[in-house]
Image 1 (cartoon, one colour):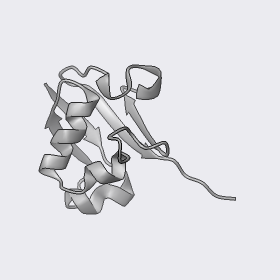
Image 2 (tube, helix red, strand yellow; image 1 turned 120 degrees about the horizontal axis):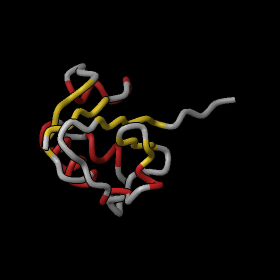
Image 3 (cartoon, helix red, strand yellow; image 1 turned 90 degrees about the vertical axis):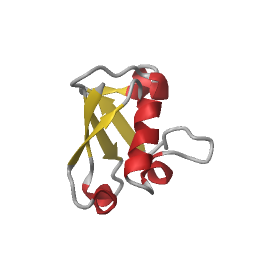
Length: 91
């Protein structure tokens, strides 16, 4: 299934400046693996040492946070839009 992944500005250097990339994936975990295969270095920025999505990285499938769905097991279907949004801290 072809999905569109929106890439945040800090990670675009890994996608040759692209703000969106298309990948084939059946779920969010497979999407991360396929992003890594196409754009090396993305997985280490998205996932911790245990392979789970980092606390400060928010992933949305069609505007729904995957943490409230099935996390990396969240199923994807053709045409889905995934947004990667790093948390922003400041004071």
